[in-house]
Image 1 (spheres, rainbow, N blue to C red):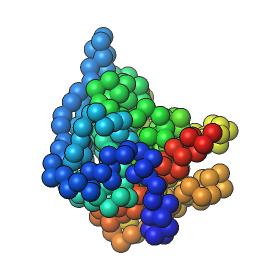
Image 2: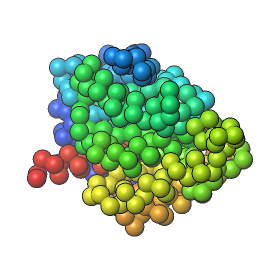
Image 3: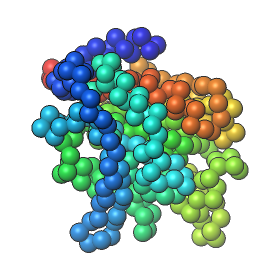
Image 4: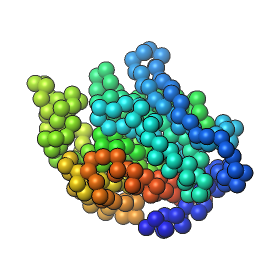
Length: 301
């Protein structure tokens, strides 16, 4: 499978940026870096801290760069992905090998929001409206779905899936690691059971609140429109939060609607970093190969 994806990616560097292969060939020694930033709307109603990954050899004049949005899980913040050196090493290795374009990644922070809009914490809107607009104004990033991917871990995967299904015109590919995308009801161990965003009037977990925002409620609208967001799904076989089962359920449900745009991996591990660490190379290749194909199709139209 990796070989097939890699073959599809032979043209990705050319499509996204002429500087990708040139930088690798020139042997540039500049290092990648992660820098902090923040959004505050003019009326101060919404704020969103975030970190930005800038690749080695980053030069604003050589943009626009493809964009990867990374969403953290429950209880985490914008620092979650920033310190994951395995991820940035995978990005840099993919760029040097020609499997990936030179890209910019952004890591917003919205603790315990599950990336939903709630009074006082409109996390979804902060991402799809404020964050994308702020990035476009400050950094040379691509502003079309062919140049954007979104990924998340656990509750971040829940958010990435919802955003992809609700806004397929914004993102051309997505990855869900250890997805807390429970089809019917979260298990007792899930942080969703204690999250205020899913609480009823009595403050306890509300199945009605969960179902109202869960992906099955979005499915009719998603399949009714023409765009499809390719999904890479990975989960651990020993995950007590049952994400392998949920990933398989999601894959089975969506495959009839996008048969060549779903990949499911069940790896050895629990609800840990191992899930994304062992699949990150394939996931990145999957996402950016699909973006490259979309970009090529767009140019041919």
